[in-house]
Figure 1 (tube, rainbow, N blue to C red):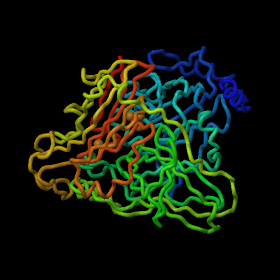
Figure 2: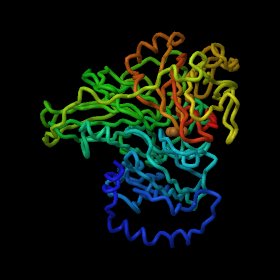
Figure 3: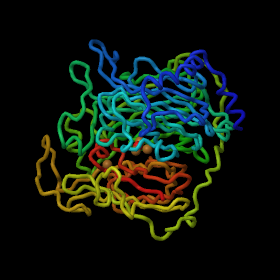
Figure 4: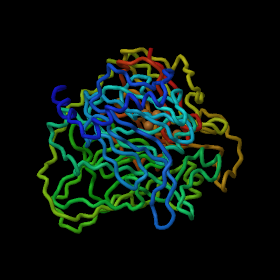
Length: 539
Ligand code: C2O
Ligand code: CU
Ligand code: CU
């Protein structure tokens, strides 16, 4: 299998070879200091070696002035050309395609006016390649990642992870999809090439001069999270996608918004056919009326256009749902014309040309080999993590961010399996968070009902893929639950889970291969930046 992988990636493009000859000199020019990972390991033989440069740029997004953005620019030094798909005039990062077993070297160059570091979301990598905030580099510096792809086939992504600045850096355009394939998936003969379509959903807001607006309403915005008023698909403001009538597609959705989450469904009520989630395919395709997609979550949807004529239009919406006692229903939405929980279009698909790619949906996808709860060292005694607000600060078990700090209850042992229980216990009068101080009116006139502040938290754990064992909704607002309950898949291998107010979720995971400090956090990027992020240690 390795031999086969290698053959595929050994054919160097002409630019590839040229660069390969010149890079030792480049390195010398840039100066070597070994404190950070600035130099490539000569013993590491990459199948794919790329430059990934984060820099300021300007692109024409709308009529009139161009928009200032930050973007990733890539260059392949070694590897096949199709390992990177870079679209023009979008401000989103490229799509990287890699294969399990491949060795990858990524030379991250920071040309931003501030510190940054890149994280590979969902990937199982050693601590020093995880993009921890302690590893940030300054403008002009380079950080070299060298790791083997150990994950199974799935839809992953990458984005900056400096503490306090992840929200604005992602918002400015620094995010991309990382697609992993493997032999097992290959056997299934799923749609490939143009029929394997990434769909990155984000919300954005702009001023009169076409410039990005972010958190213009101060601290309250940060606590609620940013909500834009227009949906971008794949880094573009027009939500149209042209697909081919007669074909079948694998649509890989990624919610790369800062705070907004979606209840995705076809506008005509046709159920969604889900084939994969985060880090794996499902055992078999599942049909759902809609799918909840929390921040940072991915879902693979099958789309069969075989019986559809040219010119057909399909619309994917975010369907209405209740935000109930989540006060953001009143506050977080003050500045947007797209309130959370309202109904709006996410994507419009038009069928242009006709082409049958002769691909059928397999009845069975794969065997997931999920973890048996009896493997856990704490089967009857899960580690408990409570996510709540106290004194206007989002907390995890009453703690906030410390760069290298880690508590005993955040320390686990290598080669063990554990069950963790994640609780969204709100805050204020109803939760563990203590009183908010009955201010009543806040921010732009939002009410704090009885001093309570509850919000959903998309919880992400670095380094692992977990299985969801249980989703206890007994403490949830029934209106909220009833409006979203058919949109969750507690199956497959996942790294992020949407923890709604009052929800309690049990997950199981193995800590394998690598010791070190890894993160777990709320992936609402504003919450994360405010400190709803902690280390856990594998020792
Ligand atoms: Cu998507 Cu800590 O990351
Ligand atoms: Cu991550
Ligand atoms: Cu949160």
